[in-house]
Amino acid sequence: MIVIKKYHYVIAVLILVAAVFLAMKSAAGREENAEPRAAENSVEVVFPSTAPEQEDSNAAETNAKAEEPLVGVWIPYMALDVTEKTEEAFKENFDAKLAAAKSVGANAVFVHVRPFADSLYPSEYESWSHLLTGTQGKDPGYDPMEYMVSTAHEQNMQFHAWINP
Image (cartoon, rainbow, N blue to C red; front, top):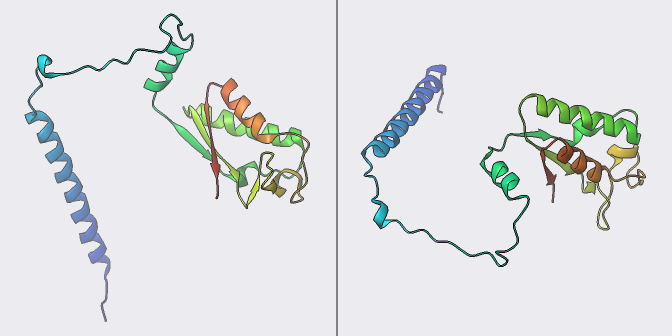
């Protein structure tokens, strides 16, 4: 019988910390010793656009967003469940979650929209979630996903839907 004592865990953690430290030090050393590439040895590939005379009005905005790091907040299905099963209560709850995410510097939300083989959006394959009305399969009379996406975009935040298969 193998008996693992508390100091075994301490030794394992110390070995792990040392391994991470050595890996970081090794990576930093490789970066310092790397030789810079000569400019004449580099190749730049440029693909012409299909319509060069048309300018993309959103190009600057798209480039700015691409450079911005993704900082997301996970909103699980249970955080969308409200006691009062009304459209107003759902929207108020989601607005509060979005405001909280924005207040901590998030620029994206990851929302669990298909929790129990049901959905928080209209679907021909899955029934409406009981989280919206209290009754599985009952149409809430509005599209929660449309509201969440449009509200997130109004706040200049990305919306990512998490779907359980």
